[in-house]
Image (tube, rainbow, N blue to C red):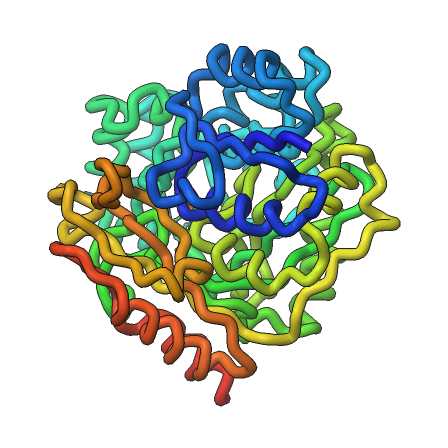
Length: 422
Ligand code: AMP
Ligand code: GLY
């Protein structure tokens, strides 16, 4: 089988390594991939949002199955276009990817179907938004409607800050068209849990839970990033919480999307907050999380490609999705200065004996040298019997990897470890 994976980060590298375990796979193409995954996939320089280029490539190269991993091509209808050419895909159609593509859509969906989430108001008029803030509870959360590289959420501690956030989105167009409509929502508190779930629109099978570390600095300080590290499972996701999520969030979401004529097939990511009033949805993503995937898939014992095909074919119910009872920790090594500005082009040294545990996110080949080429450069994942061991071993991997300007958080998993001991 010839498999194509759209995307080029650490998440895609984790997906590719797992798909490679299937004996029927003869070749995996990554579009665009990155130089750090050249041992695992044939990287082709076609961008993840070049939908015409992706479709042409798939048709011309006899692709048997495609996995569209990032949000933008999904929202742009990459799966719809590949399906039109008869190529089966993993990932939702555009009309379902809107669950991530528009926060206004997802908030209204949750309100309509009684799915627990933060209270909110939607605004398309800046003056009305500013007037609302005068009496809104503080802190307040301001969200741009559309995709904004994970940066379209601003948590404000004062009314002035809230107004500035509204002005930056609606007047200064900081996030372009994504900020034409905004959501102003209630600030929730509680630990966060990421749950990725396979669904074929009928059955939903959650994967092992995980915890992201979104802030750039230790102890959750500094700017929000795409994610600086993850652990799985997440100790806050107890069996009771899981049962409540299935009943009040996961199943109702799948049903709601069906009722709207937007059946979701693929990986649905539930960003949850376990509030004192129970679990609530902070966000939906229409795809695997990054770097959640880098701890979730290493714990998957069933065959990933088989599950993906079952999602496509609508046979997920009969398909086993089994996870190991071990723990995983992924530490992201970034370029110093990420997520603002950083230098790249430094030679990377990843010892051959640990390559299986490394998911490369931002690198390029220069002859036989691998050079850094992004903010998040790679993730090092360790799997072990205990979380403590997994954390220690992940940092052990990080110590063996070197490149100039490397930056990583020292406390990935610390909060989970403390919670697990309670
Ligand atoms: P999002 O991009 O929607 O995941 O938001 C980014 C981060 O902002 C989340 O991971 C939360 O830490 C935080 N956040 C988003 N919405 C809320 C909320 N209503 N209350 C508290 N924190 C939030
Ligand atoms: N790690 C968060 C995300 O993938 O959106």
